[in-house]
Picture 1 (cartoon, rainbow, N blue to C red):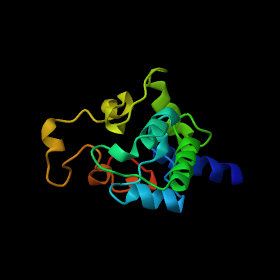
Picture 2 (cartoon, rainbow, N blue to C red):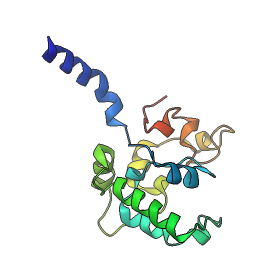
Picture 3 (tube, one colour):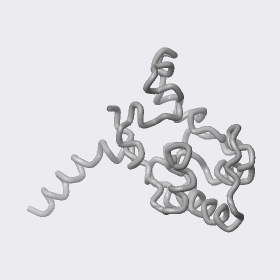
Picture 4 (tube, rainbow, N blue to C red):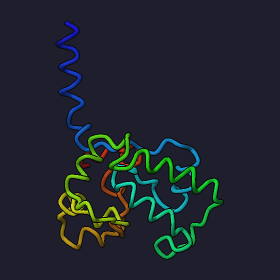
Length: 152
């Protein structure tokens, strides 16, 4: 009976796990990164990308996101641990890395091969008033902040 229940749970959970990225749970990281945009799951980029991004917070995609050095160091550590190549990157991290060249250091999740492969949409979709930008994940993936990216 227990084996059947375990198998059933695996079958039910499998689709969600296929498009699951562990969400940020650290309160400081979630607050700092989520102040202006969704706190993106670190598994979408390798640690080298997060490190480069954290090194230039004075020009964070056109905004000044500078933090106190101790806070920045803490966030950098959280991002590295859950990055695609970090110890907590999970299946999503592995998937991201498999489509990334070793010499690539992308700074935008929306420009990675993995994102582009999954989001072959007409340009009109990106211009919808409820979407506006490719980084507005929750417009199409209602559970994105929880790390679940099934097609909604």
